[in-house]
Amino acid sequence: MSFSKLQLNEPILKAIKLCGYTAPTPIQSEAIPQAIAGHDLIATAQTGTGKTAAFVMPALMRLSVPSASLKRSKGPRVLVLTPTRELANQVTEAVKTYGKFMRIRSGAILGGMPYFEQQRLLSQPVDLIVATPGRLIDHMERGRIDFSRLELLILDEADRMLDMGFSDAVDAIAKATPADRQTLMFTATMDNTMAKLAQRLLKEPVRIEIAGKKTTLEAIEQRLHAADDMQHKSRMLNHLIADSAMTRAIIFSGTKRNADQLAIELSAQGHSAAALHGDMSQGARNRTIMNMKRGKIRLLVATDVAARGLDVTGITHVINYDLPKNAEDYVHRIGRTGRAGASGIAISFASGKEVDSLRSIERYIGQTIPQQVIPGLEPSRPLRRTSSGGSSRPGTSSWKQKPGFSGRNYGKSDSARAPYGAQSKRKPNAEGRFSRDARPTAKRDGGKTSDFRPGKQSRQNRWA
Ligand code: AMP
Figure (cartoon, rainbow, N blue to C red):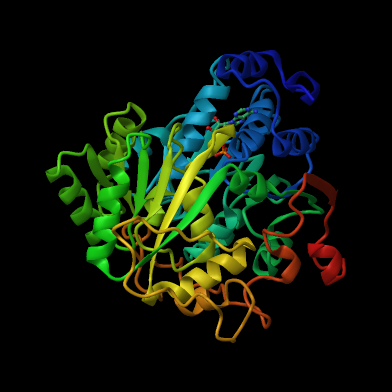
């Protein structure tokens, strides 16, 4: 399949050529024609599959023809909602890249950025807006945004948006847009909560399931090191980062404080290292990402939310200094390496306290991560990896461990985000968080397109 078969216009094809893409990825060849045809879409695709282009290109196609709306509105014709600022920046970049030869007025409405620039953006005619839900709601409440001519609503990483407590915000935003809009929903995982969201917001959506995870994971060599304690982790890290094959690495830390601390220690040892987390200003985060892209930073110590959507090519290693509590985050973390066809190495440290997280990750990915030891840095006791019973369903334990949400502080902290209005309604269903067939280990080979009508099909049909 070539891009020329996807009904894209010349300016977009010219931009694709400039990117050096030779063929569409599976999500692009499945989603682009359906979206251009005007269907609502529910697409299951992991990050790293080329999903951003899969919705940005149809959005640009829509903007290549003048608005048919009779409303005298300056408001956006396309709205993309993303869970994090980094992901929003990535989408904004993609709009500029693929829309390079078109005249598109676009901008971002993000938390942590000055209001006045966003007010200016909203006071002029704008075609496409990329926004995080919290700040967009702020502008909506101040009556600064007009959605009367909105044609296309895109939810990127919808599952993550709900995980972060934005369920009510997403509903309120969708409600403020015209009912006859087209809606595209992209999610990494599919469960009952996502089906309910689809039922609320989408009309007779076409379902596309791209099992990108296997491809993503297959390109990544995963390793596990048992750790006695933090000192042991630190010694193993020092050994690993001495490897000259590690040209660019992301080291994931469980907390913002530890990320800062580790970055300071690594810098003091003479490494080009920096931290990336949600307590930093957006400007500082952007500068850090830019420095990583330019090769000025070799070791980036990051927290989960800050690294979401981070698209830096050439990351050779991901190191999980602390294991994520949420199994999905493991896949997102290691997906920072092995992107767009490159291979990568993901090394995880696990202490005795992290065995539950490790089990939940291994159940989720359907694999046992091979364990290795560094000569001279062997753990003093083996890791008890075998399950001692309990639930075998993925995600169950991660739900129990999720932090509670309180207060309204969208986009201000990595761990304590408030929902819009009320507490997050996302709860595990009676059988745990994911239905069996929605597990990412299932149906990995190739993509599948089918008509999907939430509520009208049997449970098995829905997720099979
Ligand atoms: P995404 O899944 O949208 O985060 O994209 C992952 C990476 O794939 C980005 O760096 C894109 O630039 C790259 N990419 C997107 N589409 C293609 C394609 N058709 N061929 C090669 N690389 C691509």
